[in-house]
Every structure is written in C-alpha cells, then in structure tokens.
Image 1 (tube, one colour):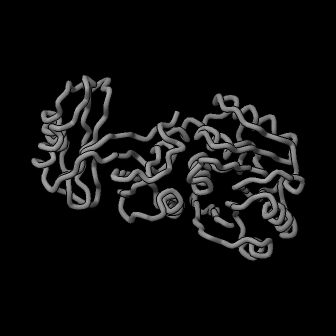
Image 2: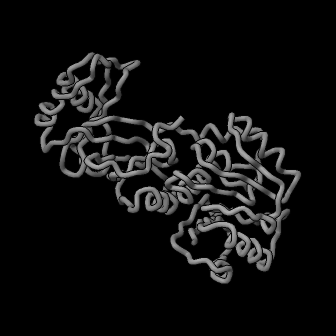
Length: 323
C-alpha cells in the first residue's frame, strides 16, 4: 500500500525533494504537518529533507524526488545520468515543475517535454511512456538541476470520502489525514488511540497508513457505522465501546476530536474530565476543537507544543499538539 510508511529515518547521502499544494484555508494545517513530518516549514511549494516519507501519506504532498544526481547545468546533469544502471528495466522521465522559483525553466509545455527527451536520451535503457519499470523526475530547484526516483502521491484520502456512513460534524478526510500525520509522524513502534472515534474518520486514515491505532466511543449507536466504514475499505482495527474515563491501557498518542454539536453538548467540566483522563493514559495528545481550550488543557496537566487552524469557510477548528 505504501512504499515506506515506516521509513522515517533520515537517509544519509540522499536528499528528498517534495512538492506541495494547499489552499489558503489549509496553509496553517499544512505547515503544522510539515513541522511534524520534517521538523521544518518551506515557504514555497518545495521542501527538501533527508527524511523519506511516502507522498501518499499527506493530503498536501504532490510528489517526491529521491535525488540521485545534481548539477549546476542541464548539460552536466545529462553527463551524470549516463552512469545510471537500469539492468534492463524500462524507464520514463518526467519534468517536475517548481512554481515560483524558476519561471523560465517552467514556461511552456514543449520546453518541458524537450528537457525530458534530452535527459531520456542519456539514460542507458529503453524508454516506456505507458508502463515503465522505473519513474524518474528532473527538476530545477534552489539553483541547481536534480534527477532522481520520482514518486507521485495517490489521493487515498479522496477515496475515503465515499464511505457508507457519514456524520455531519465529522472531520473531512483531508483534515483527518493531516491530523494523523501531525499526531504520528513516525509510526514505528507507536501505539495510538482515538478514544472519541465517532464514525471512524480518523481510524480509517490511520489504518490505511498501517498505523497501530484502536478506537473507542461511549456511544454504542455509532460504533456499528464506524466498523462498517473500516470494513468497507478492507481495513482491520479494534473499535470498542468504552467511556474515555474508563480506559486503562497506556498509549503513546491519543487523537481527540472534542464533541461539539447539538447532540453532544459537553460542559467545560466534562472537557476537563476528558482531557484529564487522556493525560493519564497517553504520553502525547492531539486535540481538535472548535472552542478555546487552552486553559482547560493546562489545568489537565498538558503543555501546548504546537498548533494550527483548519478552516472551511467561516468554520474554524484548532488542532493543538500537547504533551
């Protein structure tokens, strides 16, 4: 499903270049996801890192190039590419646009195709534009040309929009997927819980990435829908009937989307109970809220580490990272 969902270790000697796309309403959330996955933020549509992350994990990453060669000029890059050994594999070269940095190299479809052909002529192998064994990208970024393995993102979150059961106030799948990445940037060895899982939107995104997460909710009427949503996408995961105050197992991370609609009105005292319970069974908590809860978080014993807003028109959620 994912080429390296657990591969979060920086690869010495390998630079990975990611291209990003997000709307203005998503910019804050996208930046928090960047900080969580890579430890830094890019203010352009390109981010460079030694951290290898599957592009399909993020709703904002478009593609990734794992740099094999780089040079100051395209001619020098072509010379380097001649050393590439494909062992009989077919290949395709794609020009990756870098909007905002190098306007001249990005202008014109024909110019981009010409660069692809020029690079391809220096690859010792057979080109196959339809079903290649290997995909490569060429790009001009930060003042130099790069060539490397090209991986495009698959919009897995988009497929998850078509689930059997919905809930009017549930997170949309893009936000849910970003929240999972913010909470669990490196899934290796991590045990997570969504103790107010509702219809299972967060669970579906997390389990589709191979993350070890369980769900629970005190509303027995909603749990069959959450289980059906998981099964609809061929996902397996534990979903239990339990009040958050009764959870006794310990988890590395908890993701809590605080109830807020007319059917789930909770008082500040109940919010405090929920968060105090989470403080006991989780080392790290990511809270999604439509109301100010800083004082309640601090009273529950948390330190606020980072935050973002997720907007949809006039509707605003806060995503708050705590430990």
